[in-house]
Amino acid sequence: MAWLPGFVLSLVFTPNQFSKLMKIDLRPRHDPVTLNFGEIPYATIYLQITNRSPFTVELDRLHLELVYGSGLANLYYLERTKMKSGSTTDIFVRNELSDAFAISGSRRTEDNRCTLEVKAEFNSRISSFGVRTGRLEGIRPEVVNVRKNIS
Image 1: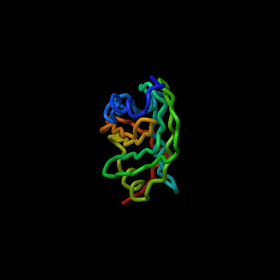
Image 2: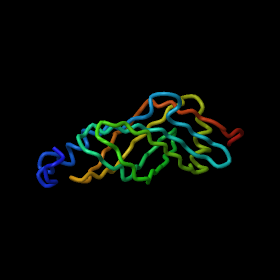
Image 3: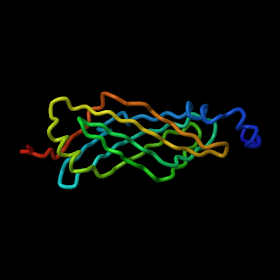
């Protein structure tokens, strides 16, 4: 199928169809989400992206919205990454968090859950397309360096 011209393939593989062939989720083992509320607070998130399309695609960028308690953090991954057809790629995202997020998160010690939404942009030789995961819920992050004596 790769021998067909791009304009012919674009009639068959629309951006919407490409979106359905990409799977984005958290890494299944260990701690896929870690929140560090230390002196310089940061979040680390491990994602897995599976390319189920018959073409090599390129991850252009990711935007992640992390909600923990009343805090919202916008995280970004801006490295372009090639993904072969049928492959699964691990993506490591580490971004700083605001002090306000760390203080708010340190007050939240009982219901230790967060939600995450991933918005990804991809390129292929046929078209560019976006993928949105919707809210991934029930995530139990590893929380370290919780701040004490916060009023």
